[in-house]
Amino acid sequence: MRRTPIQVARFRAPDGSHHTVGVMPVKEGWQIVDQNGCGPDVIDTLTHPDDGRAQAEAVARDYAEWARLPTWARQ
Figure 1 (tube, rainbow, N blue to C red):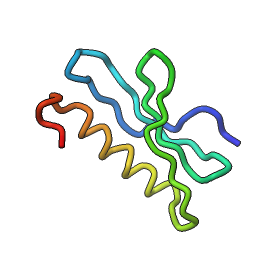
Figure 2: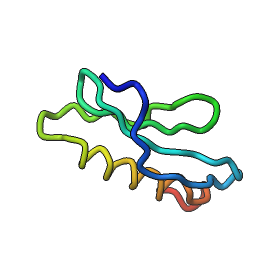
Figure 3: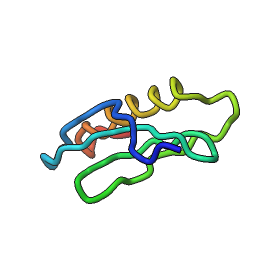
């Protein structure tokens, strides 16, 4: 099983830090991870049998769009 995330999106957080968001297959399904320089943070794990790489990549892109917003603008 692949242990290196497949890069999907990159963004610069409001604090100026650079992040790479990726997906990787895991036994349970797909994980979405934020690689922020301090190690990967697991954002979500998709476990439904119908969820594949395309769904994981969509979640990763949505997360990157949300995470680049200033804290006050996040809902």
